[in-house]
Image 1: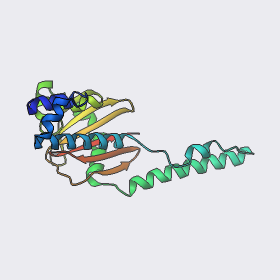
Image 2 (image 1 turned 60 degrees about the vertical axis):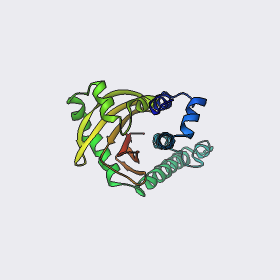
Image 3 (image 1 turned 90 degrees about the vertical axis):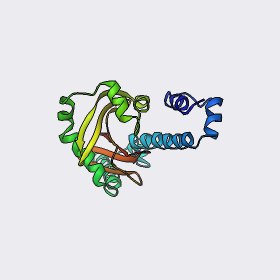
Image 4 (image 1 turned 135 degrees about the horizontal axis):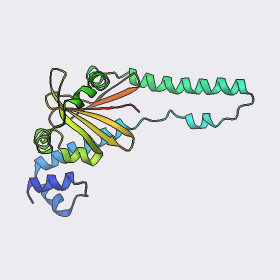
Length: 205
């Protein structure tokens, strides 16, 4: 089995076969590729999940004796939940993640109107950072094209996933040491390092 065969098998979404395992054990490049692939899948899953504050569901089920008390309790729970979520995001707001949110809010429509890349061109452009096959394992691509972002060229991807619409900004020239997050005006972003460059993930939920 060659490295190309291993990559094709890995990005197809199937489980690692005995042949793939045997090749990986003797190939440092494919071992590193698998580790980076698993990190990406983990980060993307974490970015798309918004945890419910502990005890939130139980508090919603509490019986209320009077309409005034019921209203005040519900308002308190909502405020507490909003406060927990907002505080968690504000603690780790990152400038690059905030820039990703700003792009979606102010520039995304313009980028889509500029038109999409041909598939073959997109595959070639993203091969070294985030292959198209990996993106398509996560959701359905509705748009992909180059765009100016943060002083260089990024690749703008609009993706439909079970949770709704998600925007990806693949940044080949932006290197990160660790993942960062931000939240602003109902939008949430996470930027994660890739083997080469980095990825911004933006959603509204």
